Structure formats: structure tokens, C-alpha cells
Image (tube, rainbow, N blue to C red; front, top):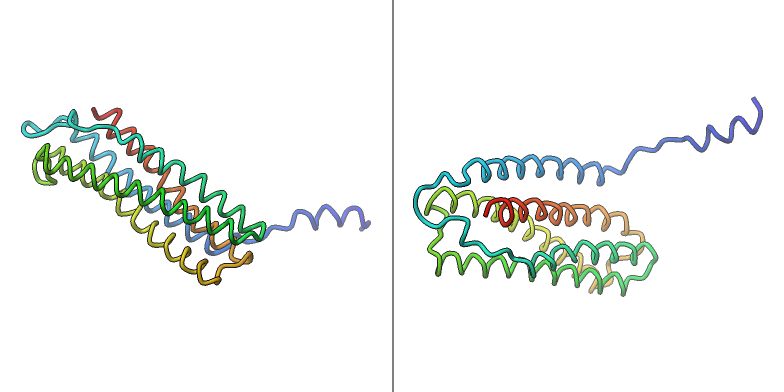
Amino acid sequence: MSATAAAPAAELRWELPSPGRVGMFTLIAAEAAIFVIFVVAYLFYLGKGISGPTPAILHAPVFISVCLFSSSATIHLAVVALRKGNVARFGLWWVLTFVLGAIFLGGTAREWNHLIRVEGLWIDTNLFGTTYYSLVGLHALHVTVGLLLLGAVALFTLFRAVRQEHAEDVDILSLYWHFVDAVWVVVFTVVYIIGR
């Protein structure tokens, strides 16, 4: 066999994907299935309640949605910075991602406060209240988990425990955050556009 025939074979060598990446994609697939169930339930029960507030009371949370969508860009920039070895820039982008996520979660809490205190919509008010709080609450729970993870990495960065060799791990964690953002695109569309 000639040396030129052996060279292409070496280039075609296949490597197993990292266990962390496989695990994260498995988690995302399972969580996506759960969200599909909640979205279908929301759409199925939409308009079936005969009493109490209806989806017409909702106001699209545009500002906090922009914050959450922007956080996908900032977390990407954080990962890129860490891959290049710039830990300081990574830390800034990472903290900005945390802040944008916290703004989103705070805005969700503010919206719920309005719906409960002003509109009288509780989770047990009617089918709309049950499905709305279940779907949006499930997403808020995922944002909360993401913020806890982002906060932990921010603390590790503050104590100089994050280095360039951790870029792959941070990138795997960023996949979860991108998933949370992508889910919000669906939830926002279903709840605030289609469902009204």
C-alpha cells in the first residue's frame, strides 16, 4: 500500500463524542419532550374554560424576551473568549448572560404578580390559569436552574478556577442555556401570539 493511500485513511478517523456533550443532548431531548406535552396541553385547552380571565389579559413580554434572546449571544461570546484563553473577557460575557437571564426571570415574576393581584388569575382559577402557569412556570424553572449553573461558573471564575482548558465543559453548559432560549421562542409564540 502506498503512502498516499494511507494518508486519506488517517484523515477519516472517527472519534467518539464527549460523554458530557452526549449527556447534555440526551437531557435536552428529554426536556424537549416534556415541553411538547405542556405546549400541546396549552393549545388543547385554549378557549375551553367558560369562566374567569382569558388569554386576552396577557401582554407580550417583549423587553424581557429580548433580554433572554440576547443572552444566547452573550454566552456564545463567553465561550469563544474562553476558547481563546481570555478568561477576563469570558467572565464579563458570562456575568452579562447571568444578568440578562435574571432580568428575564424578574420580569416573569412581575408579570405573574400583575396577573394574580390585578387580573385575579391563579393556577386554579380556570383551565387557562392552570395551563398558562404550568407552561410558563416550567420554563421559568428551567431558567432558574440555568441561572444557578451560570452563577456557579461565575463564582469559579471569580476565584480563578476557570481556565482555557475548561472551554469544552463551559460550551456543553451553554447548550442548556441555548435550549432554554429556544424553548422560549416556542412558548412566546404559543402563549402570546397564537393563544391570544
